[in-house]
Structures are given as structure tokens and as C-alpha cells.
Amino acid sequence: MQELPVISNIHKEEASSSAPKKPNWLRVKLPTGENYKHVRGLVDTHKLHTICESGNCPNMGECWGEGTATFMILGNVCTRSCGFCAVATGRPDPVDWDEPQRVAEAIHLMKVKHAVITSVDRDELKDGGSIIWYNTIRAVKALNPDTTLETLVPDFKAQVENIQRIIDAAPEVVSHNIETVERLTRQVRIQAKYRRSMETLKVLKEGGMRTKSGVMLGLGETKEEVLQTMQDLRNSGVDVITLGQYLQPTRKHLQVQRFVHPDEFAEYREAGYTMGFDYVESGPLVRSSYHSERHVIPGYGINKWRSEKEQVIV
Image (cartoon, rainbow, N blue to C red; front, side, top):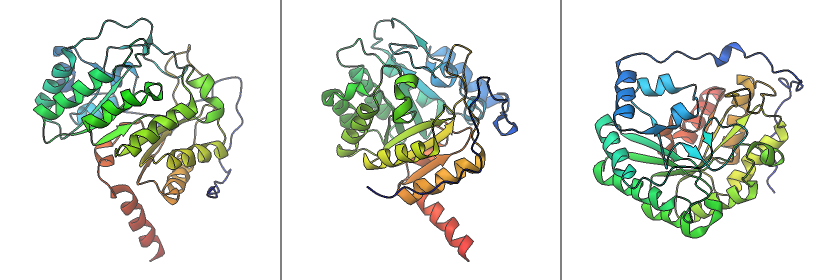
């Protein structure tokens, strides 16, 4: 196995029984502006779900203000009950077969050059929702031929037939978030399996997809475990990795164990590029779809990093 980079312990904090105080670097702007109102109106008019709202994303104001949103298909009720997620859990509504066209039309009206689509888990469906996924990707591409597309998909229980539908639809980027380290997976992603997610990502990569995954920090993981997770993702062929701070959505969800300092996120960025990731997005407010329009471009991240290193040497 490749030797893992060394990360310093200068910001190591002990987990406590009470929630730590939120630091200054996690402050975000309130959503305002005409672009925000325009996106808000489109989402409401077309009866669309967004993970921006359902997931209480801290970057919603910034992204919607720039005219972009992450659409969530297959309803807004998930069959899984992850300990970190603000999306409702329960019995989902029946599949809406008109949804793919509505999403495609909304993206067309927004005139975005890059769109992100995600979904809840639909474990009660034999196809895991993969048919609606296929239909949505194809509808978006048909109506928006110049729009690049990232799809943040479930694990589909690593069933190759369902994963293949995503590959056949051919979005520019396919993302599946590992979310946390292996030791904490049962606690954080109750119905998910760490190795199953890795297998899903591997199958996607072997199918020719540009792949991406995300990790949340601050749930009690060690630095060594974060590095091992990053290396496991790289071994599964993942091209793009995002690392961000976990924020507790409600008191019913998992408590934040510590707030990771921006300097530590910077160290993970260095380690990720050293491991060979093509793009590393690492910072306290980073979420999976943050700056995702840049993640489509092969070489963009690592070439920028190499340029930064050369400037430091000079």
C-alpha cells in the first residue's frame, strides 16, 4: 500500500460531551438579491425539490445568488435514516414519471452552463430509482445540449444493473459520497456500508465515468482515518474529492465533535493532490456541489495546485 502523507496534530482537539462553540470561520451570508429570488421562483413554480433546502446547505445563498441550484429527484422523503442528514425519512410518494421533464425545463429556464442533480435513496424500488435517474439525465441533455451535468447518486446497493443505467446516460461527472470514515459508517450512515460505496464508485469508474466523492469532518474521526479514507477513494479510482465541516442540522442529529480548523483542511488538500486526485476541494464550508462547475474539467485542480507549488519554490 502507498505510504500515507503525514498530517500534523497542531489543531487536534478532544471531543467533549457538550457541543463545541461554532467558530468565526463558519459564518455565512444570508440569501439575498435578484438572482436568488429568480431561482427561488423557478423552484417553487416547477414544484422542484432541492438538496439546498432539504439539506440546510450553508452555501445556498451564494449558489442561488449565482443562479445555480442542486436539484433533488425522486421526491423529498428518503428510505434511509442517516444520522447527519436533514432530509425527511419515511415512506416516499409514488414515483413521478413527469419529473425528469420538469427538471430539464427548469434547468433550461435558468440558463445554467452546469447543473447538479441528486436524489433521496429509494430502497423500496426494485431499480433503486435508476430508471428515473436515466430518464432525467437524458431529458436534461436533450433540452440543454450545452449544459454539463454532475449526478450525485445513491449506492444502488452496488447492483451493477442499476449502476449501469447511470453509465449509459453518460453525465459528465458521477458523484457518490462516502461521507465518513469506515469506523463511523454504521453510526453516521446507518443503512449504508463503507465497502459497498467503494464498490459502487469502482464500478462507475470502470464504466468510464469521471467520479467524485465527499467526506464530512468533525464527527469523531482521527486524522489517520481521514487519510485512509482518502486513499481508499483514490484506490477506487475517484478523480475528485470534497472535504467539508459537518454541521448538525437539528438536535435530533449527530452532534459535532469538533470544528476542524481551515489550516487542517489545507493540509488535506495537499495530501489529496499528493495521492493523485485530479481535483481536491477542501474547506470548512465545502459541500459536495460547491464549485462543482470546476470539477468537470480534467486537470483543472491539479494543474492549479502544481502552479501554486512552482510559485512557492521560485
